[in-house]
Image 1 (cartoon, rainbow, N blue to C red):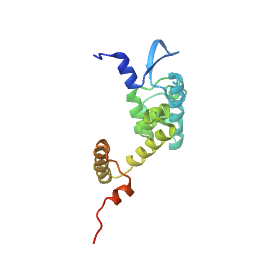
Image 2 (image 1 turned 45 degrees about the vertical axis):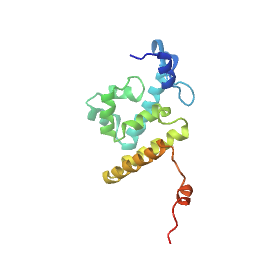
Image 3 (image 1 turned 90 degrees about the vertical axis):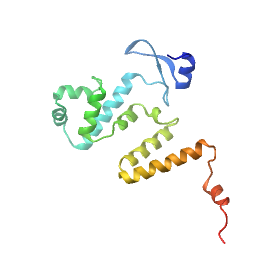
Length: 170
């Protein structure tokens, strides 16, 4: 159990707010333009799904068949009428070929960085990493681990600083 609720809220960046869909106060982390209502996030998710479906060239009927749904039920996801469960999100990502984090980014980019630019860079980097071969990813993980170790030790140096401290070769 959390001993100091206010401290937890502050550390998590949560603020008390309301949403038309919920009859009690809730706590959310503000985005870049304040706190989006759940309905707005649902509309972003719906737009993302529609774009992904359009990009594959599949019709609403075809996607519905792949999901084992009627066309009308799938259409409710694209119209922000029905809410996606995580299992349906996973299934949709399998069928339409997107990474689930891309959908999360579409609805809540503030979870990926402190600024819009940082969030955009984070998702762009993630997309590039997802397409790399395993051997490259494995090497990249080791490199990033080394960078974290250096960073947490407080010894981050620019390339110029690093080369300035290298002994000259004679």
